[in-house]
Image (cartoon, rainbow, N blue to C red):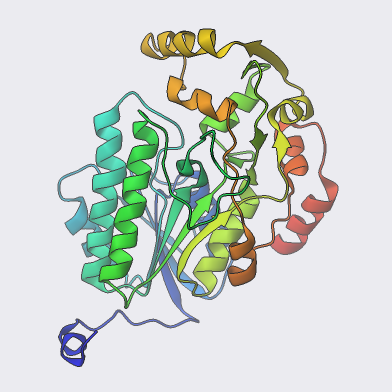
Length: 346
């Protein structure tokens, strides 16, 4: 960047590492709500700005709530106004759907146009940092996937899935924002499927069924992420500065059959030739909440490499995959991981 260009840039918002102000979009999401709870307890953060269509259910002390609908035409201007008024230095953008919806146009407005509005506001306000919640599953479940997907690997999503297409577009927009606004630090966390007491995503729903369909002849390796570990990862990236993209997941992978057994679920094998048309019918008739494009996650692996997150940001999950599924299913107390969590939150 030339000296002339630097001189023409607006002055950045004041940034004091001991007196932080963070705004969280999607404040009622699993990530948003969990991060707000942590920020409420951290003295370095003097104010938290919760942005969502409804107020979080938890008690708020230093958190200020503003109703914000990212599907409205004036969302960008409204966001910029709030960021400026509250003197925000960092935005965590977590306003994304946890599971597919049939309201595709509305979802696109929320996730793609909404992300555009948030990023435009961040650019206008010259924020110190933007942190984005992204999905590791957006790499897609494909037969030629490597055993471990690194951040450099192509994100292919799933053919015909608007759920992943919108999230991929939001991530690409954020990457372009990072290139066009080098003074603002941008961090993207691609999270494996999140499980925990508050998880509402499609994987959590699948694993909550007493009988779970599986595809005959396939037993893909599966990766998970405990919601407390996910929140830990976001706190690491709010507390310190890490530029770039990072895969986030718990330790270990398990075959789908083992995962279901640990959860105490009954696997119902089906041939793919039957499962595919049946899944389409159930989705079209609104009996199922999961579109047929997701069947490939029951056939092919989508497992990420977390080495970069460990090396650069110091991410060390407290729950491995067995503890994560056991605690989610209520079959085990996961004492070691819980003890670490209690020690951290005292």
